[in-house]
Length: 48
Image (cartoon, rainbow, N blue to C red; front, side, top):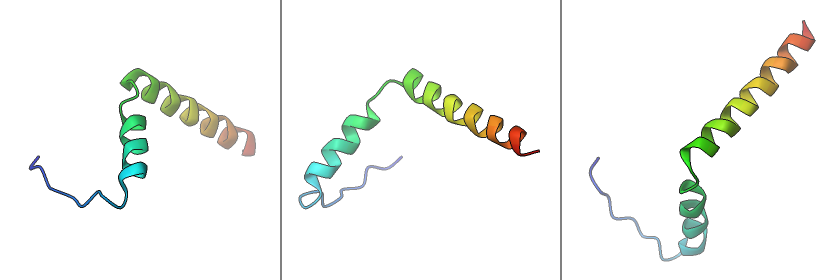
């Protein structure tokens, strides 16, 4: 991917928070993803 310079002066604080959140481990992200996925699956099964 080509690196694109973005004006981040105005959004610096928000950008820092997002980058900090993005650096959470991939295992945590996958776990929360599957947790959400399973919750949705259970909800859909209960509706039927």
